Length: 473
Image (cartoon, rainbow, N blue to C red; front, side):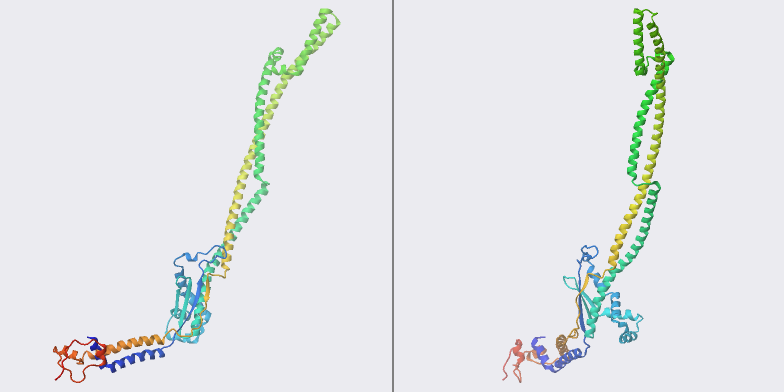
């Protein structure tokens, strides 16, 4: 269909098209005027993803998770937040809502039903390239939608704080119980250690053990020296006994006898007396009183010398016995000291075990106590990384329906409805409205036009038909 034909058809049925157009526009504008107005209010909440932890002082890592914002959006739309809004605004006590709930016939409890209705009209979206959540609520009353939007923002902030504080409170209770048990274990370990110290009078077991080890080392050194001395004394005593059994001549050859100062002096004195006696005998004769006197002195000196030599030999036996006795005593002292050192080592080991028990109990208690203190502080927090940035205000204009938009839409729909109506009316009843229509309908050329020459406004705005025109005679 050519544009000229379409315009001629539209002009011919202009009243029907106008009626359809007016009806659509009137319906759109009238429906807009009669349709209930709907208002929307938005509150903005800022999420500080890099907020510093007030307890540990470390920078937060909330934004590290890619699903953090999606999680927060779900929290805002959660039933828990909606129920907090219902309780905060006391919507369950509203008579109109009670009546609506009864008319709906829903088996859902009133609070949950109101929460579902609120969430159905709630929209939450994050701002582009930011961490700001926009909470929008739509309703029929301007003041009410602002109140509900702000209530959702506050409920979300309070819920976020609860979700952070409640686990900390539960952990705090558990850590408190655990700290009490560990404190009891620490007290018991300290009591065992104190009782052990009082029982064995232990102040510093390492210093005492060092002293006893020094004594043990000293006794060991003494024992080695006494063993060597006792062996030498026994050997010398045995040699003296053997020599004494052989006579005075053999006894005189014993080294200890030879080294005795008394024996040496007695021998020297005996030699001197014998020398004088020889001189007196040579000069005065053997019967001279001096010679007889010297003979008596010499006779008295020899038994004395023998007794002294025997005394030296006897002293060697006594010395050997004394050294053996001292060796036995030192040996017994060494064994006692060794037992004492071993006992101290055993006590030190037990003392070390008890000390380690106390240290382990102290470390466990300190760790749990520190964790308990930290969790306790977290349970008392009244801060969260969500803050109300902009509160919702009652809107001055409704968000729907919008008269201008609906008028434009109804105008476009009116034009489409008019065109559609004209085409529907024309298709079953085609008429010849121009020379071109006559030529196309009959297949014959047009020889002339009777009446108007067809130079109407339609031909001025359309392409001229390529049909030969002949003047009528």
